[in-house]
Structure formats: C-alpha cells, structure tokens
Length: 464
Image (tube, rainbow, N blue to C red; front, top):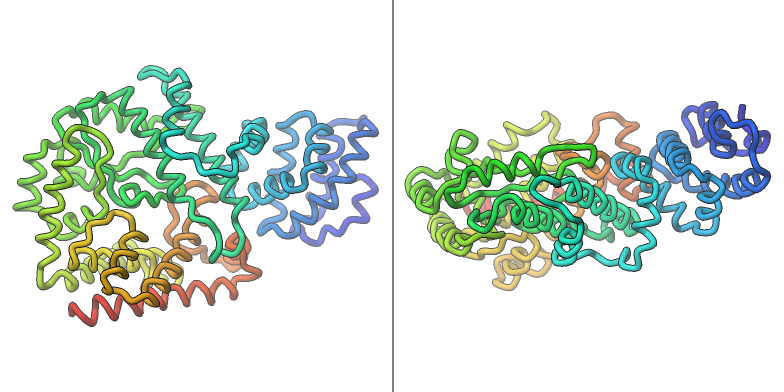
C-alpha cells in the first residue's frame, strides 16, 4: 500500500500505475520496513516530485523507476542518499537519465553504488582521460599475469565513467559529443597493459577497423593483427583478455582479418603477410588495411610500410570503385535484416556506405589516414570533396554514429538495426533526444539521403 501522499501524485506517466505507486512507497520506507524515521519521511517527500519530474521525461519511466528503487536498496542509507540527491538535483538528473539510457550502467551502479560518488566527485570527472593517464592508473593497481581482476574492474569502472559523462553531455544528437576517442584510449591502455603482463615486447600488434581509426563505440571488439612468431603469447593474450570473472572481462580481441581468416594461424611472420598480400589477398582484405595502425612491438613500422605498398597498388586498379561497390552490395545482402529502413549500418546511405565512400576515395587519391573524420578533412583539402560536401557528410555520418552509440550504450552490445516495434522505436527516439519517432525519422532519412547522394556522385557515377 502506498503512502497517502502518493494518491495526490499523478502516476499517468507509468504503464503499471499500481506497481509504480508501490515502488514509490518502498522508496520511503524500504521493503518490509514498518517504522520510518520522521527525517527519512520528510526528505523522501521532498524527493518524490523532483524524481517524478525526471521520470516523466524518461523513455521508459517504469523500468527507470525500478532501477532507481534497486539502487536505493543497494545503497542502504536511504535518508543519507535522499539528502544527497535533494541537495544535488543535477546528480539526481544524472542518476535517473543513466538508469533510463543504459541497463548496463544501471546494473553496475546497483552492484557498486559507491561508484556514483567516487566517479562524479573526482575533480577530473568533466575531462576526458587520456591513454597515458589510464596506463599510470593501471600500473598502480597491483595486477599481475596471474591476477588480472584489477584490470577487469578498472575497465568496468572506466566504461561507467564514460557512460556517465556521455549522459551528462547528451542533448540533441546533432550537438552531442562523440566519446569514441575516450573509449579507444581506454581500450588501447587496457590492451597495452595486458600485453606488457602477458606477452612481453616481441609480439607486434596492429590495430584495425574502428579500433585502428580510434573510433570505438560501446560493446565493440578490438580488431587486431598479430605479427611475429610467438603464437603462445598471442593465444594467452586473446584468452585472458576475453575471460570473464565477477569483474567482467578486459576486452574481446578479433583477429579474423589475418591471412586465411579463422583458418589461418593466429600469428604470422612479416614474410607470410607479404606473400599473402602479394599472391592471395582479395581486394576487401587490402581495403581493410585503410585503418591499420601500429600499436606495439618491433615490427609495427615495417608492417605498415609493407601494407601501404599493397594498399597504394590496389588504389590504382581501374575497377577499384566497381569492386568496392560490389563489396558493399555483398555486405548488404549477407548482413542486412531484410528492412532497408531499419538497417542504419548496412542499408542504403548507412554507416558502412559512408565509410566505403571515404575509403574508396582515400585509396584512389593515396590518402593514408586510419581515422574517418581526418580522412574527410584531407579529401576536402585536396578538393576531392568541396567544403559543402565535406560538411554535410561529416554531419550526416556523425548523426548515424551517434544513433548507433546510443543504441549500443543500453546493453554495451553491438547493434546494427533500429528496433521493429513502435513502442521501442518511441523509447529509442526519446533516448536520442527527440520528442517522438517521427522527428527522429526525418533527421535519420535526411542523413542517409546525404550519404547516398555523395556515394552515387563520387563512386557510382565515376566508377561504374
């Protein structure tokens, strides 16, 4: 039974009003508690209207309230927490928004409620944390090859920190910050530190894909190549990075872009890569080198020089644009969901089309740059794209990447399609900063139209 005061509160924002009333009542007195201290009751009643105001703006008020109640129960000292939140309305806003936009972040806070104050009270909370600082902090944790849980726990805390900063900066998607650099710095620091513990200095690691471009999103694996001959060190690294414990894992490594893919050896000497690129590699494998970046190890510079030679040679193929267009169509066919509208990644004018557009032009113009945005800047500087085209392309692609980031943030997992159901589409639109799905739909289709028009102009019309 809910406290009498709750009968005066409008519960229409909730789908299950009876359950919401009970949850709000539990907030005040705690589950199974019969005596409520007057101070707790007083501060709880101050909290209710502010809490409900933020819940009314949530994409899913019911689920968000449920997470909030679980957090209060985990925190324990409810009167102390309520006083903290009433005195710091911005903190309450951050908590409610976080529970609404990320189940993973919410579950982490519920499991470790002390992290909220640890992270937000840190004077450096408003600043991105560079890789060197991550490495310094990792060094101080006492981790070893036989004790990697401090690294796993650090990674989890830092992802939560990035998510909290992301929520704090979220507004309209067009103005929201991109946290890809922060996630990439964290991932690289965790990988470099673990290599130091497990693999020594002789294993060369090359970053590829979004990791190579320093553009990671939530829930992304790290695309890598291993160069050298220490197979055991690489196997040890891959297994231990992926191994989950109660602290989660460190990071998943994906080395499938190596010669012969999953069938090939995990680690190859430089000569094997050279022979493969010379005689057997398909264009898509050379195209993937666009984002190759040396991370660590003695053979990094030699590998990149060799990769650049084969990449530049492929860039001069007369049928380059035709072949890349064929690659795009195969991806669409093999990985599409069957609904082009929902396929924001593989669909017409989607994320991959925006990437292939830029990478095809990079190859043709010999612009070696792993980062997509910097590559667009160089294409503009060389007048391959004019100022208006470069500006529109960056805005459209950035918008789609922001949509992807918000979708992936919810469970820290890869997502390539928009949700099907109207209810979930509305919730996603609200999490993206829109009032409704129709407003999101307009921006979404406009962005895809921009990318596709530029792809048609620069790739299809000139190569097919």
